[in-house]
Length: 510
Image (tube, rainbow, N blue to C red):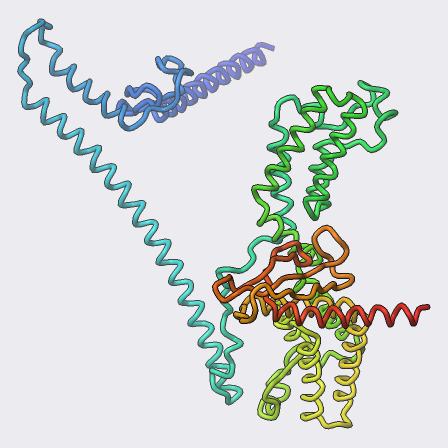
């Protein structure tokens, strides 16, 4: 029994010794860690600028009061410290000259030189970084071009052709004037910015969100088509607004709803009207930009004579593209597939080139357009032969184009008459003759004019001292044009022809 007690006592003493040794080792580790974490004396606080502590220290006098100090403040503090060290043994006496020691001036110069040197180094590093980036970019571009040249040379060596014939392998450089933003995205961005400006108008908070049926239970009893700015913004995100008219329609609906529920003299209605006025003023400021975007999104929005004429020609090209097994005429002939094609055919033509010519406003009449369509058929006949399937398909395309154009015969005659008159008015000729000689009034049925279903052109010849152009009229797009007597005679003939065609069609219908 006593042996057991003695054994337990000895074991307890050993455990105590082990715990004491463990505590000593832990204390040594803590002391070493504290020595490592202890801030050096030259550490500067970013808040107050003093040494010996950091800005996160609660004992700092600027703790929680302001942000970090600037380089100028640190320099001022150093200068003040130097000044205090030099003047600590002096006595302040008014109206007494003070003698400044050389050591003080030397220290001031040294601090200023350090600041200037540091600033110069930072500027030099920035310049070097910009130069390095430019050099790296130029080097990458050079490597890319070298790689393309090697690829072309290797391809030419394998195929036995010159590198000039394989220029399609060269990297294509994007043009500077390329369209960077889709017109729908740009128009949507404009409408979103406009909605942001509208929300800043005072007393318009009631229109920012949909009306709550809990707060105003009878609102939807009176208002059948609710509208608010949040709903309009959602429409913008979904590209619902393709024109200014669509946007204004919803703004006018807000004004209408406020007038129905609140009355015309209400402050809410006046605020809604101010929203509408702001939108109208913004539209008038950016008239040209918005009109261009709308025309890009919807080409039919452009009401000019040339554009309306082009739309009919484009529909003709689209109908030719839809002809079955006509893929050979969609794009230019590949010189690899038919190496001798361009030796036989001197004036190639295809449907994609036709469309590009239409977009460039090359065609002013059906005759010019059909001449190029006929060229497609003639080229196929010359290269493939009259009995070839390609030639028969080209003849089918020509008949399809004539069919589409004949369906819009009346409108095309009107547009051709206006285009010929506009073209002649662009380069007017002086007409000599009797002074004040009256000219016949010509009426073109069905041609939209200014405020009337028919457009009437009239004028008279002036003497040689008068202006070259005589009379101002409006075309179908509402723009003013000046016409001379020669133009009026041509337009009169076109008008009489149109009138006779219309009368013949009415007799046939009867």
